[in-house]
Length: 231
Image 1 (cartoon, rainbow, N blue to C red):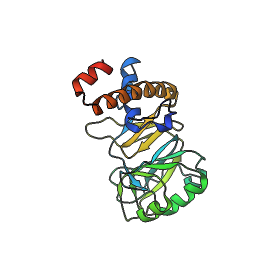
Image 2: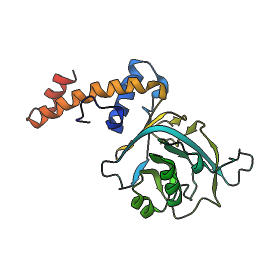
Image 3: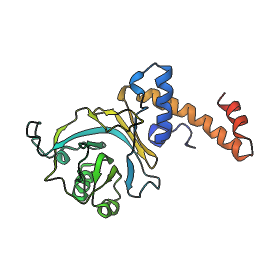
Image 4: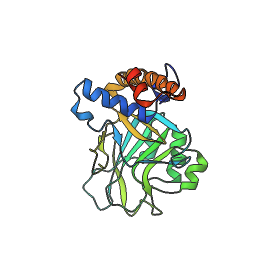
């Protein structure tokens, strides 16, 4: 919930956005939104672990990693970190069951120079102290001490990438230019053609939640408050 009236989308939390996508899935009959855009099991590691006010919002720059043994997959002509667009959120898909990191302190240094807003890694990262000293927002599944060189390589950029599913949650596909909202609660992806509708629904829902919060702080019960404001 947010207390910022008429907030532009960057001020809405990942929870607000996921709620909005769930509403739109039902109201607009959008079966592809079964996941509500939620990318499960991704955590904020930097600047703090799942704490603080860090929030990133921006268009996705997608990077597909493949095992180093995959010699048939396409090869990039430039390092993916050298083509990061300014104002983007880097989204990296790593093959399952790999022990190495695909993002480290050197990548963060380059990303900051390029003007990236943050990185979301569906896999492992390393160099946590360097990430935190840089103050760069880093979201990932978990960590590793192993570098990428002998294990994985970047194959394609700005292509659809499918993030690893949770056994209880469908996979999410991120297209280049989709909007990513990531904070201490988690990561959610907004299809770019739904951005305006999501923003409108967030404004509507958070205004109601602000009324609920005020009533609860005044001593009203949950059932009474929800019936009054949520209907």
